[in-house]
Length: 92
Image (cartoon, rainbow, N blue to C red; front, side):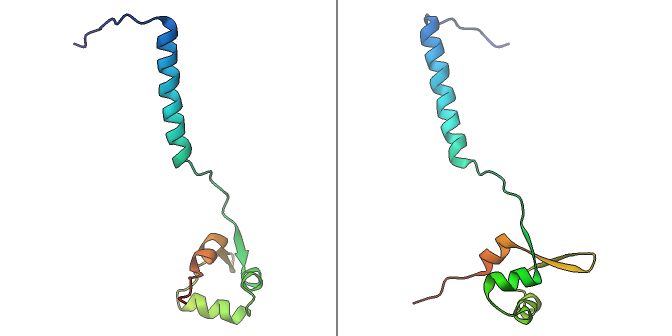
């Protein structure tokens, strides 16, 4: 059975202690919080325009596994976030 301990604390001190605890927790939450952005889908032509390449290059990159495609009703889409991740840094 848990025991209750009384500590002589003024209401203001208790309030300040609670506020400080909440502030610390909120700061931790802010550090780890990433707002969810909606997924943006691009068609083949939009993807080609974004990367300034021909649609055939997009097709080849999809076949080679460089880009991941998604489809619905015969249409092909690409996630903008995955397109941006596929671009790699070049060594100098």
